[in-house]
Length: 357
Image (cartoon, rainbow, N blue to C red):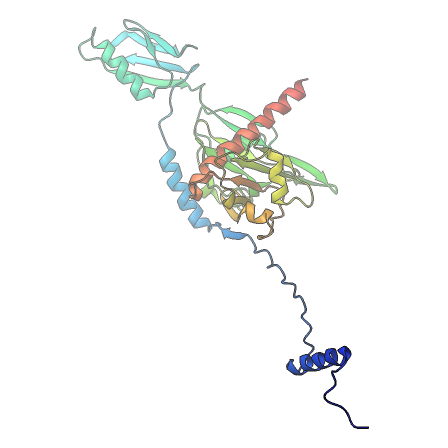
């Protein structure tokens, strides 16, 4: 039967024709079904690591430089005892002249003179000037017979930690010997030292002296055995304690017990938040000796955002949050050392108070 092309096609035929045309217009190949593609987030970048470790010769060069910069004539203090004589004036020769608690000393003809805080030369010049009112050419000699005001502190794993008078020249090894040496314990019937010499340090007026305690005490390198000065602080931490420091631009800098799985980002929360001056883009994790460290620098905000890897802390780490604008490591260290020293001193005082109770 012939087909009548003048009759309209049913609706189903139109739809079938449209479907055939659509299929014909598609390019050949894989299925044209549009599939959603999931773009994987980029992996967090690792923190920046900076190796600040020096060779022994570099450390010694820095040590000599800092010692020369910090060496100063000792200053007199309360409790010191002087021997004062005036040439050819026997009545003005006094073998024992104490510096009183008010910081002054008394001398015939001139009365009270401020002595506390002065060097011997400064006191000599003042006394000589005052005596010129009574003598034509006074020749004054002052000798310190007892430097009772000068001392140093040794803290940590020594037999007798505490404050010691600096009455004569005292080196680091002599100070350790005076404190009874390093603490020892028993392990499997053997005597072992409890000190952590890797993290031991000496600070002077807030500056760190690059003394390598391992080379000094383990290898006998006496080039690191420097003479102490008044106010020096020696820290010999324990090898058994597991602690980390959170310091810098945080609201509650302190020493915290180390725990397994202790990431930097969560640990800084223990310090009760940041100050307004905190530079969170350069949080420093200081690992190893303060005098010869490795630095791990992280961007706290990127760590929180998942853009940078977090840092798993280790025992002895120091987490330092610097202020904005402070980028020089030496200047950072000048702030870190006094803070660590103050925290350790606070722990000592707290232990002493609790022990006495």
